[in-house]
Image 1 (cartoon, rainbow, N blue to C red):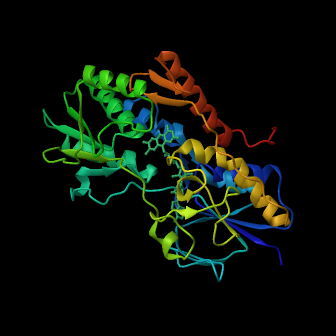
Image 2 (spheres, protein in one colour; image 1 turned 120 degrees about the horizontal axis):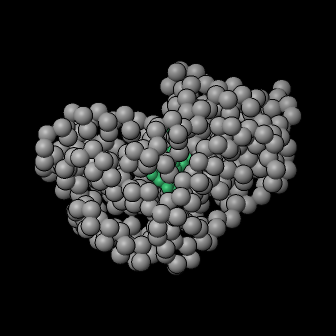
Length: 362
Ligand SMILES: Cc1cc2nc3c(=O)[nH]c(=O)nc-3n(C[C@H](O)[C@H](O)[C@H](O)COP(=O)(O)OP(=O)(O)OC[C@H]3O[C@@H](n4cnc5c(N)ncnc54)[C@H](O)[C@@H]3O)c2cc1C
């Protein structure tokens, strides 16, 4: 009987797995992809949709052609339970899949513990595919009156980008809407260098984006966008897979589960205890080739290769107005050129999976 490889989630790492499986098919393997959404959404360009630089279509990657390229059966459903001892995955559709090898790239959700019960005035940034429609509905319904206000809760890179993108959006539409960036911790973008923080403070002051730290109080705002933290799907910890204290799957440098070596995980849902780092798409993208390689090796019974996280990486923070702040190795520069560079990198990423299903060259 052919071994069954089941991929769950077409996240930033697993779209690369699909591309490589298609380019170098592992002989005699049955492959199934379980995907909650018909398209993968690329988060790096999402604030640019709010700013009006992109349409949603610009940053979505249809999953069915990738699955077809990989020779995978594509099931439009959501995994809801896992029994890693019986090697059995249960889907929301009621289907049950038995696997020999399982790979999880299902991302994370904002940590909504502590979010106010605001109904459709509360707009979580994830799932990414639901964010823009939910935002547009909230904007139309609750921000139409003069003097309306928006709070963006969580001042990590994505929260800051969203707040500045909204200012650009409202300016372009001649709308005078108050925007506040609200952060529970003492500082905005705590994982970025102080020079970036200083620039962002200056830009927010110039553009009338209020910064409130040390609080999560959103009383009085008409719409609240929730970007804070990252939480794991509860069925991961409930399955008995080894997890960290927040319920993310613990993996070895090979991306194999520390408790069940026939389960792999990458992207936000995985935590590598020997190399802790923030949950960011850039790491999921870097893990893609290693995940693809190790799934192929595991199928062939060969030793696995380790993933070595990069020590330094280029971080590009868009400031809403087709400008960006670039930082790497402690050096920070800003300008329109940085946005153009980010735009080029982002568009090339999308094109690789939309049009570029050809042989892997490297
Ligand atoms: C507005 C915003 C901007 C960001 N900008 C950046 C940036 O510029 N740079 C950066 O590095 N990071 C950025 N991030 C963080 C980045 O989005 C995440 O780190 C990244 O998406 C994680 O990728 P992933 O592969 O783990 O999962 P995802 O890309 O989230 O993909 C997971 C996929 O799995 C699917 N799925 C989920 N659960 C199931 C299930 N049970 N069954 C089947 N399918 C399922 C989802 O629908 C989704 O398609 C940003 C985040 C946000 C919200």
